[in-house]
Picture 1 (cartoon, rainbow, N blue to C red):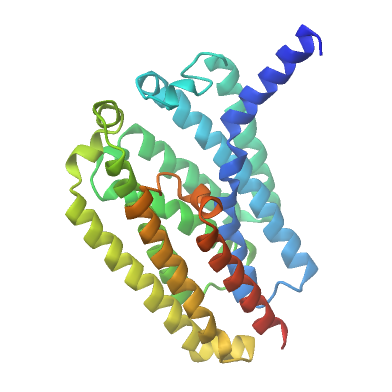
Picture 2 (cartoon, rainbow, N blue to C red):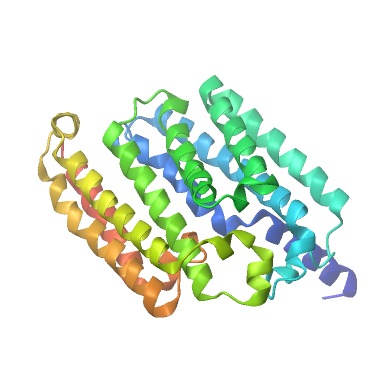
Length: 300
């Protein structure tokens, strides 16, 4: 491989790092609605949700670039984030800005194709993340709620955005799950706290481990409770023509408990979207839940 080819490959790698495709797994939340509304067999509906997934992935990558642009000076003081393309100045800010605009326009354009509601949700997602980067990330508690809002917007994009009425219990469960992951992320960051970290994320100075542990326990209990109530809801039973979804609750419980164990035992959880691949127990509980759920609702 000649020098020019190596340089091109390295440059593409830097751009790929900016886009963070490994975090697109978060956008899988858009498929929750089509699964639990029992319309996943409808090809046209599945296509619309797939378009929403693509739109959210492009839009989210634009948001990641915006965050890196806004935080590049702070990232230079962080032990690992200093290697990000913008902090390391391996990608020019002007180039990153142009790429961000292209990604946002492409994502919003696809959202508009899906429908006006999908477009509004994507615009709300961008606005919320801009507000988070500009100042809300320093507000204790509110910072986690903004992060949770991102997950909720994904669920709404896959339901309201494509014309699927969302289940109130499922929305509440999604909110509790998002808050659980958000507070767990802050707790893991406290475990890894150093003088450099606290300068990089000032809000950590205002969090106390005991308070975060209580918030984690409350939200974990709410996840299990709201999901259990969803499975026993008469509307759910009527929609799926089965009352057996209650048997998927143990998978949810084990996944939550194992995640909490990894958080305290291995200080995991700083990147929730990646932790499921690092702990085979969490990954298998998610796969087991998904397989059993699909099996139960596909029998009707």
